[in-house]
Amino acid sequence: MSNRWSLVIPVKTLVAAKTRLAAATGPHRTRLAVAVACDTVSAALSCPVVERVIVVTADPAAAGPLAALGAEVVPDPDRGLNTALRTGAAHAARLAPGSPVGALQADLPALRPAELAVVLASAAEFDQAFVPDALDVGTTFYGVRPGVPFTPRFGGESRARHLAGGAKELCPDGIESVRRDVDTPDDLRAARALGLGPHTAAVVEELWPAP
Ligand SMILES: Nc1nc2c(ncn2[C@@H]2O[C@H](COP(=O)(O)OP(=O)(O)OP(=O)(O)O)[C@@H](O)[C@H]2O)c(=O)[nH]1
Ligand SMILES: C=C(OP(=O)(O)O)C(=O)O
Image (tube, rainbow, N blue to C red; front, side, top):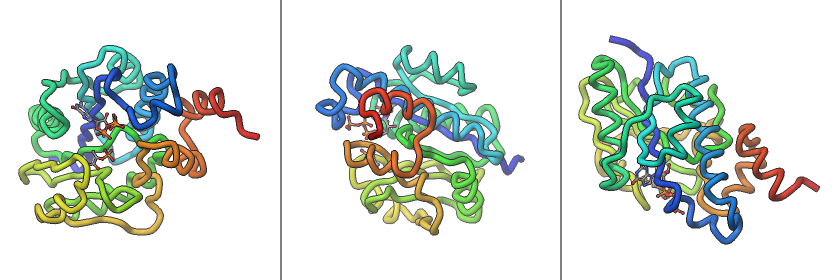
């Protein structure tokens, strides 16, 4: 039994990823998607209550750099986001059956380890818990205590589905970086204002130098 978390981070095949940023990023879209995932995974691995990060992806161009950071990579069966998450959680259960398991979106480029630690400490008090995204529409984190079925309901308006599924909603002050996922240029501006991780900052500074 451990109170440190196994976190599953799903990374979509890059050719299909971050399409809402396509017009803004042109040929740099997939490079930005990898940078964002690298910052998310790095911050998660730096969080003291995270035991391991399991990345689920079918894309070798994402798998390589994320494994180099210290993530374990599990192949994606390519049957959608929630199947990818369940696949990662099953891997976690084999490695550490007594540990809590969480799913964290890969598009949190401003993620701060201390804010993630606040979320995980709070989530550990409930059978199932989740964090709504900054717009209160989607979800950025969903997690369960050891022994509780892992039932992610991500995709689109998932906040309402996680609530309906009985998960406790966590949104204390001071976890902005955990809630700030990046799908659109406006999201990227908001994440930049919070403070981007180094991989994303390097790409963003190159594409849109600060005045
Ligand atoms: N492994 C895996 N990850 C996925 C899949 N679908 C979405 N994701 C991941 O789930 C998170 C949310 O993805 P979406 O917002 O739906 O897709 P996106 O690629 O980020 O953005 P759009 O193309 O603009 O929708 C991101 O971390 C994605 O990488 C999937 O089928 N498999
Ligand atoms: C997949 C989700 O959201 P988004 O497409 O906004 O990243 C979600 O919030 O469940």
